[in-house]
Image 1 (cartoon, rainbow, N blue to C red):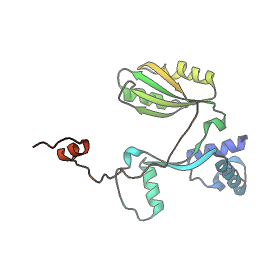
Image 2 (cartoon, one colour):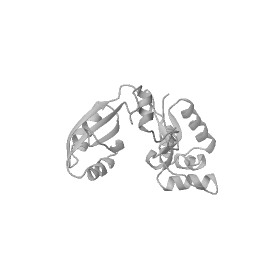
Image 3 (cartoon, rainbow, N blue to C red):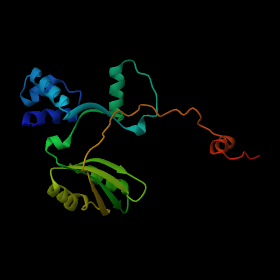
Length: 205
């Protein structure tokens, strides 16, 4: 699907806030409400964009009651637990290169992560345990854009020692429908006898 500048402008508005009204978007891009609605529907039908609630899984281990769904959603958004945004396919927006970059750091990794988060082409930053101190996801126009990003921005961040780039060849699955509650195990505590029985070992006294 070929995207013109108007469609890209609509996508940008919905990436900022997926709940923005079609009338409001129309005023911003110079189209009628009906025209915006039709364009959004075509983008969704073509798989270019999804309107989803993107959650922070780390914050979903709680339960609380709200008076109305709208109030509950607003509280989740305000608390940073959830965003409602337009999620796009970068390949169809002219960004032909996506990559995950493993980064080894020295010093305060939180400060490094803050600097990395400020880079426009970086859309995901996480601090990790293991062989990398941080992992970032980047979206670039082409290999030249990726090389420039690595050399002049990511490796230029104070504290970055080395990077390893994993270029995406094909996006097989991207899911935003995460469970809203942690799985409740039926048998959270298992005795030694249970373990021995499951392994086929004799029980010990």
